[in-house]
Amino acid sequence: MNEQGQASHDIDRLAALLRHGPFAAITGAGLSTASGIPAYRDEHGQWQHARPIQHQAFLTSETVRRRYWARSFLGWPRIKACQPNAGHTALAMLEQQGWLTGLITQNVDGLHQKAGSQTLIELHGALAEVVCLSCRTRLPRSTLQAQLDASNAGFSPVMSSQAPDGDVHLEDSAYAAFQPPVCPECAGILKPDVVFFGDNVPRDRVQAATHMVAQAHGLIVVGSSLMVYSGFRFADLAHKLGKPVVAINHGITRADSMLTVKIDQECAATLINLTQILQRAP
Image 1: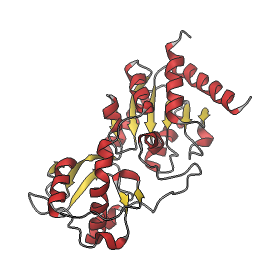
Image 2 (image 1 turned 90 degrees about the horizontal axis):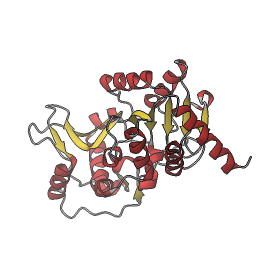
Image 3 (image 1 turned 135 degrees about the vertical axis):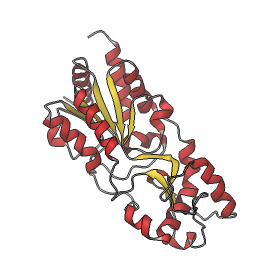
Image 4 (image 1 turned 45 degrees about the vertical axis):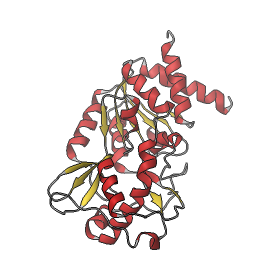
């Protein structure tokens, strides 16, 4: 059987599993690449970009915060303008038709909401909000963008490329004079409402996602290598509970040894094919 024939066979197997009961799904950066947002890792699970910002460094270093907000200031307009691709739409449709109990996403881009997904756990938060670490005041990211624009008039350095999670690559010298934001209420540190590397996913989100996986017939992993434990734990949980785990992902995943089916194909095209198969009589 050739590669395309094997992929079709595996999608049929996934459809057959879904007909036994609805699955939960967990999504990662590979789903959003078709919307123009780069992934952190390549198909071998290796970093494609500089290491992402670390939580503790953001808390303790004004230089790190200045770097983050300068890059985010330039990258936010593109993230805000990004639209769901056919994969996001297909997942929303699968949920609406009862094939999925809900979605857990590792992404912070908000594209599942734009696509119409209803039962959604944003495991790592969302870029669309900013929170003060002192008084917990919250601001829409768009509001903060206007404030950054006003306090950094004329800031328009040359960007080398778009980076994951809503920022861009800049030379270190480019942001030396950038004025990072402070809380308008207490002048505290403002942080995007996302879980940086080195931080912990809030317990209530982990519990909600654990419950979703435990109640589902199985788990579909879409566009994630699961190299980060915050996502891998749910594949591990499903496997330990004796539930089928299926991955739609280019390249390796940390859960490859646990998978019932592995579909090494582009996410959106695979999900479209899946919806079409499920619409037919079994």
